[in-house]
Structure formats: C-alpha cells, structure tokens
Image (cartoon, rainbow, N blue to C red; front, side, top):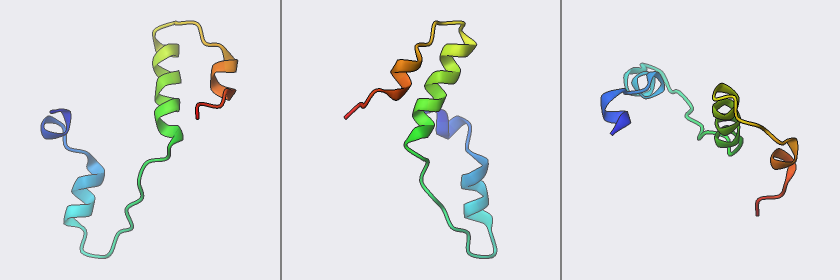
Length: 56
C-alpha cells in the first residue's frame, strides 16, 4: 500500500533512465539499521549485545 501511494525516487529513475542503470537490492543490514534508528527516535533502550548476536 505504501509503495502505491509513495513511489520511490529509485523506481522512477530506473523506469525513466535513457541509459543502463544497475539496480542493486538493499543490504541485509539495512533492516537492522532501520530498527536501531526507530529505537533511538523513540528513546527506547538499546543494548549493544543485540546488534552483535548471531541471528541465524
């Protein structure tokens, strides 16, 4: 739903580029980084051990 209401700049550029543009998927770390940013923005406690634990 969010993508239909707020299309990304990257998708627009890929669709309208007149030259070849390489498109790379987001890094697996981007979700972790977004989670940390949300916690910091909401003033929630953040334990550094959560960032270094193996989540396999």
